[in-house]
Image 1 (cartoon, rainbow, N blue to C red):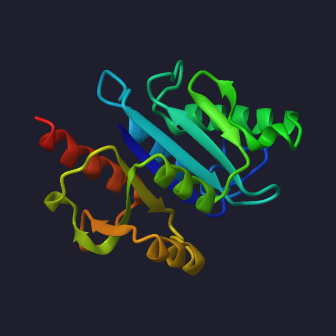
Image 2: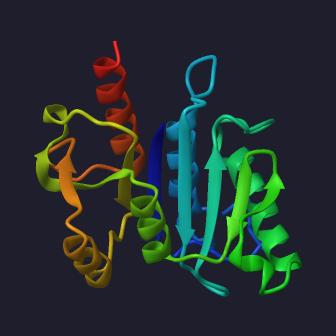
Image 3: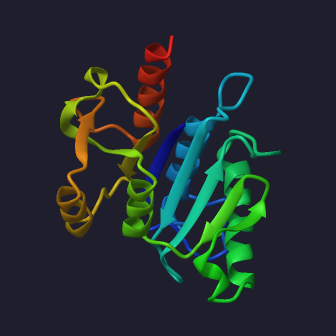
Length: 202
């Protein structure tokens, strides 16, 4: 399995999504949608061995985590608008359930789940599962030099992770790895990581 944890610092946590203004009024929902697209979609297929966690931290109801499971996804297209519609459905489902149920994964559509969880919750959950967790950062060690087994990759959006987030990762001894010496968009990092793993699996 390949897993990604993406922190979306300003992305809206309400289903009131303006599909005509994903970058602005939706808190860079466009970037999140591109990350989902690059995490899963191939030219004529979908990556079924991928799980993607999006931690939405924008207003009005943060934090909310949306989980995408590649082996279960149906009817999702790679374009931003299609993905945004499914995120809207997940946030609508979250709005409909009570606070107790929000502690657990609730399916909104096939392969897409939602619950109340922050960055720390998901990172600790992955470590408890025994996964190898890595922080993608331009100052990290070259990702080409690692042999990965069930890896989980942490990415920030255009704002990046907070000092508190990075302090947590340091305390947990999470390794920093890099796919480039310069800062790239998160979705580009996902594409490069896939390429590295694809080559290593040959």
